[in-house]
Image 1: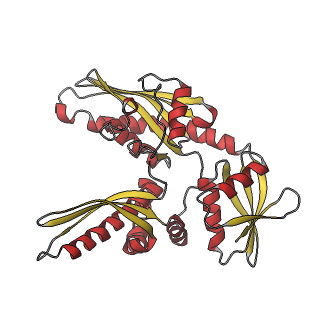
Image 2: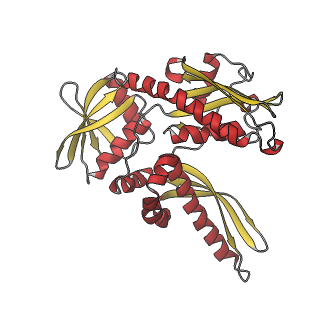
Image 3: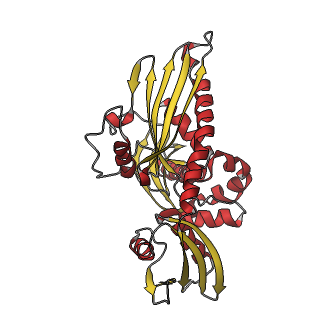
Length: 358
């Protein structure tokens, strides 16, 4: 499973007059732009991508290479007339978010939105599901692709299960089609997901599509909601095309019905958290605080909101809503590998938490 700021991309370029070096460089440049593009679309979702397309095309994509921290060439294939590369891009998330914020693009900072899809597909009586053999399953199924798009449009972040975490100890005893919530949570934690969407999609040619899904909230090992949507198929349609459009309709309708209760569950959790006064000292520029704020809401488990309250020279304070104790918050911040800069705990008074940039 790739990190949040990573993306895979393919670039290709023509080989002109045998100049493979130029073709390789051009292919890599194209892949870098496509990698940043993929990350932006995943970050914004299709709705906001459409709303802010001019900003993306004008301000972000032309400067794609500036927003790449590093990249790795996974494979490359020089051909007689074309040069192709597959790369993994690591995007500078802080820079991208800062540029989006400067352009007036509002990003959702809501936690608890990462979800793992575990939906089996039964097509004309033949069942398939990825968790039976995760490493050898041939990519995302048609229902998963449709659900990915539908949930992304709602602001959720579907996890791509085809990227198995390197070195992860994959569960062995939970490979059956029918699983209990404890089993689903085991898979959810493996992929660092907040939700597991579990169920079955039955597709019967010239008859109907039926999609049943329950939303399991990983932190509580609890089913929050469950929905079923069924749609009849046109008996006169082309058998090869009979599932595609109706499948999109079914997944969209189900997502419309199940996502509100998921959002309400997240909101209910955030309303029960404690408020901490958190101060960041030693800032060199104001955007240091926004990088720190993004880190808290995106990467620190339990931090649900950050509201700035006071700014003085190189110091800024905020009210942080956190699900847990003060010492747990401090430990998660100081021990997190994705801290935007080195931090140390500064002696403070009372319950306030003061961090200093080293």
